[in-house]
Amino acid sequence: MLEHGGGLIAAARRYGIPREQWLDLSTGLNPQGWLVPALPASCWQRLPEEHDGLEAAAADYYGSVNLLPVAGSQAAIQALPLLRPAGRVGVLSTSYAEHAHAWQRHGLQVMPLEPDAIDAALPTLDVLLLVNPNNPTGQRFSVDTLQGWRATLAERGGWLIVDEAFMDCTPEESLVPQAGLPGLIVLRSLGKFFGLAGARVGFVFAWSELLDALREELGPWTLAGPARAAARLALLDTDWQVTARQRLAADGTRLAALLAEHGLTPTGGTPLFQWLQRSDAQTIHEVLARRGILTRHFAAPASVRFGLPPDEAGWQRLAEALAELRG
Image (tube, rainbow, N blue to C red; front, side):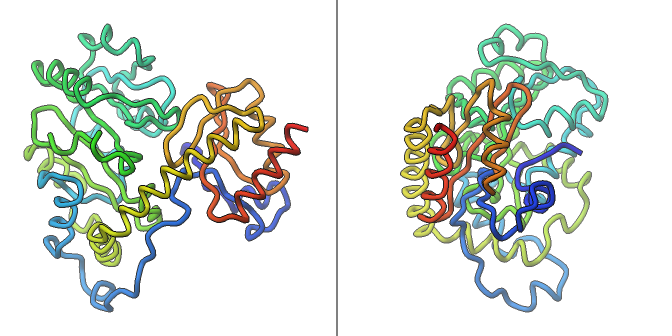
């Protein structure tokens, strides 16, 4: 399996620092996520049931009824290649690696692309798969650009798959309201913005035939009852969502400024993380790790991603470590 951020137990063992002493900036999750209240006993004691209010809450929040709940985006990432047994798949050269990995595992030809090469490559592709905003680069694609690519692919039965895991901070840029159009598949998740990665809740938005085929592939009870109950409440909590967007926008700006102040101007980012492409990225990652600060290191291209500190003590600790790193 591929390596991901959040490997705090492994980091604690490797560097000999107790787990509770770490500042984990490796995941890009909202560090002040939505707090799950006590849930009714029935959600633990009964098999999960559809149409318990989750689908309606998701349709209102995301802006489309053309949806299927899944056990996090990862479930869809692994299942979608099974629904298209042959073809050529274009993916960004630097992006969330699970996408390319899943299609390669099922024998499809994966073509890594730079963003400015997509237009030229499009006539050769059966599937174009993008993360928007991209992880880890923060690259964004406009709705108009994406819709143009979707229309071109759909003319010959192709797909545009857009993973919007980091879209919640900028919902006006989402393609979900267009779900149902031929060839458009959009993935969403409660892991990042809501900070509920452990619940493993996601949604696929697409035309009805695709959703039916994916439902058959995944089988019944894709989400646990407690996960459904918590997700419904989170999606309905509009006051929390407004406040979280405002805070994350401010914190993302603050993180970019803090890094730049210490000579580490980000190459890109989103409100939830900042990304630095640098030849000394591994050294930065290692020096911080020895101080109990975990970042996400990428070997190719050499880069490091910083998530948000959870509190003022975390911000101060990061600032002090960056000052030591620069000195």
